[in-house]
Amino acid sequence: MAAETCVYVVDDDEAVRDSLSVLLEVNGYTSRAFSSAQEFLAAAPTLRPGCLIADIRMPRMDGLEMQQRLIERALPFPLIVVTGHGDVPLAVRAMKAGALDFIEKPFTAETILGGVKDALARLAEPRAQDAVASTAAARLETLSPREREVMEGLLAGLPNKSIAYDLGISPRTVEIHRARVMDKMGARSLSELVRMGLAGGLQLRFNE
Image 1 (tube, helix red, strand yellow):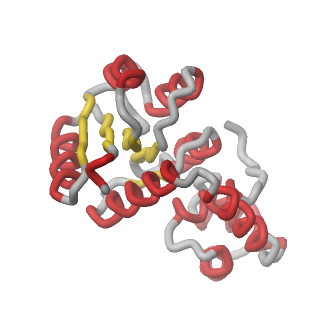
Image 2: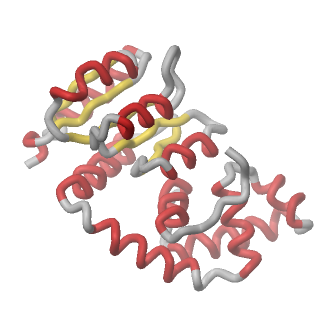
Image 3: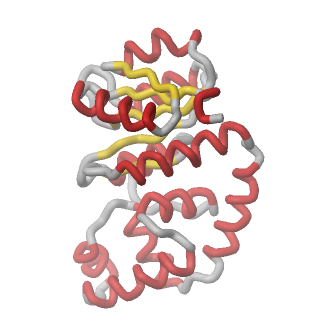
């Protein structure tokens, strides 16, 4: 089943490309690696369906620009963006444009494989996203006004201290609200929370 589709890795770091390719192939996936966004875009029209794992920060053309080029060409590759620390706002922009997930460095094998599994499942069943949107919207309705404000801060990539300062509350209170938000939204990670928030139509409060 896994070998019927391909997982494409785009990263300018050769060590990252090699390690991800080995991880994917030992877990039954066919993989193909590219050293730049330009190299992938040149090959994309001839590639079979699959999901794409791309670093959000690359020289010459970054992951966001590559994503936009794929959208313009109507080339549907479910995208997982890999981000460094502090790149959450960039990752949110990518998800607003249609990326399925973001994974922060350093990542674990379990995180990568889980993201690939979800991406390929959505490729096979695109209508499943409608159910996700409905569930996310219902869960957003369970949040208090303060919890929604904290969630908006998290999706803006703000640390707890900054959210606390903006809202005039203590960092400890933010931590409590954050835990409640994660529980009510059924999110196990920040990337899941971002995905649920966007799917549910949450309006972000930061400028792109």
